[in-house]
Amino acid sequence: MKISLEEVDHIARLARLRLSGEDPRVYARQLSDILAYIDNLNELDTSDVEPTSHVLPIRNVFRGDVPEESLSVEDALRNAPLKKENFYRVPKIIE
Image (cartoon, rainbow, N blue to C red; front, side, top):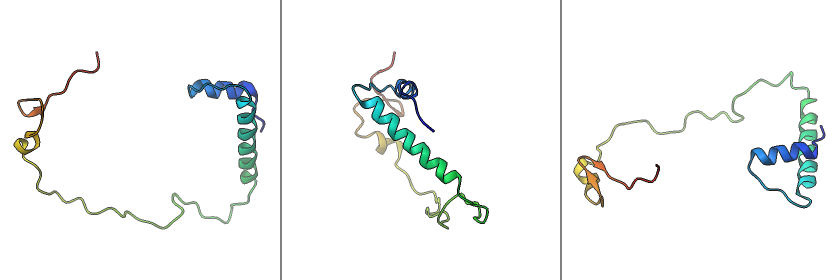
């Protein structure tokens, strides 16, 4: 599949990228090469390959979720420069 310069410009606008000079031509060629490679992969016979959701037989490797003792509200707020009741107080940054 060949990517046109118009498609590259459209993708660049969506990604909020400014392309200049030879950039659109370079990216059009690179994207076309990537899509051609994917087309080659689509032609592979995978009928004997079992579908997987993960290539390695890894299961959950996280530790158990065991509740532990936490900081008290007083300890958590001890060094807070600004606080109000049991909460951190921060400057307003969004109008």
